[in-house]
Length: 324
Image 1 (cartoon, one colour):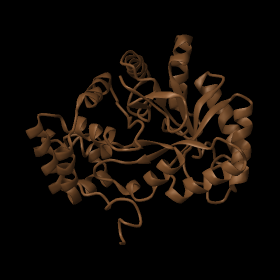
Image 2 (cartoon, rainbow, N blue to C red; image 1 turned 180 degrees about the vertical axis):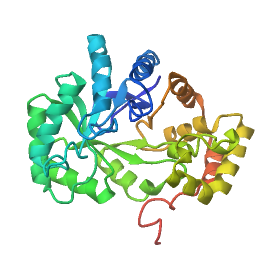
Image 3 (cartoon, helix red, strand yellow; image 1 turned 180 degrees about the horizontal axis):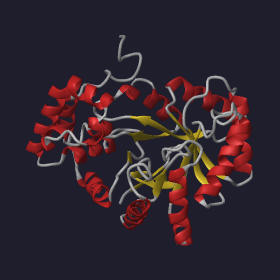
Image 4 (spheres, rainbow, N blue to C red; image 1 turned 135 degrees about the horizontal axis):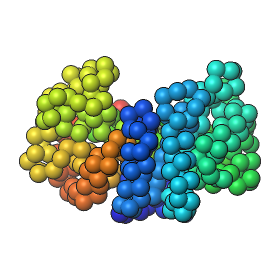
């Protein structure tokens, strides 16, 4: 396993992060525990979850599953960098969602209980809140840091200007600010290259791509013949039909290279500047072990250009992407 600093922070995380969104809804608890144990054996030390994962509003099912795994062997806690998120609805009352200071504090305390830990290594703002002032958000987060309940703060689903706004307010307050941003990023969806990646580079924020295989569309869906996995969902089916020609060309290209499409898709992200760790979401131990192959796939400049020809990006950073 290789490791890299999380953005400009000193903490080091594995080049692949273990995403846990499937734990509970698609992966039963015993299998989820096996996946986490195997991840630790393979050197994966970056575990990512969210309070809303698990399928039942307000229960934090996935966090509970992770908490019981940690409690079964307390030594595990010090071996991982544990990340969760706040924003989504955890109830049906007005203050059970978003990023008010009230909800941030309550959500942190609830995540700590479910995860059976006394601190969160990375507390991520799961979405931008357009109604709560940044001064209020940072006041709440800085208090949690001062109390030792949170070490680092990250974001998810932020636009480039949201990152700039958050960092400038943090800078005025003498706060460390955000160390990471978790965004959709893969060969099919490269929008972050316009403004999010440049903002991350400017502010020392590490990018954590989620949905690195676009819900399975980049994992060999046509080759398998059954169009399995998330690609059976309506949105993914529409995307498959829209991009079928490119996906077919990609799978053929991977076959000529002698590599699995999923490994190539992850490896491409590992070659991208500014990417700290793609978040993989295996449902089984076998899928986790398969993802590790990406760490051994090396793509040269010619191959990267060939992939750009199949999946053109937005044209580089803004404004050059659309202007002179």
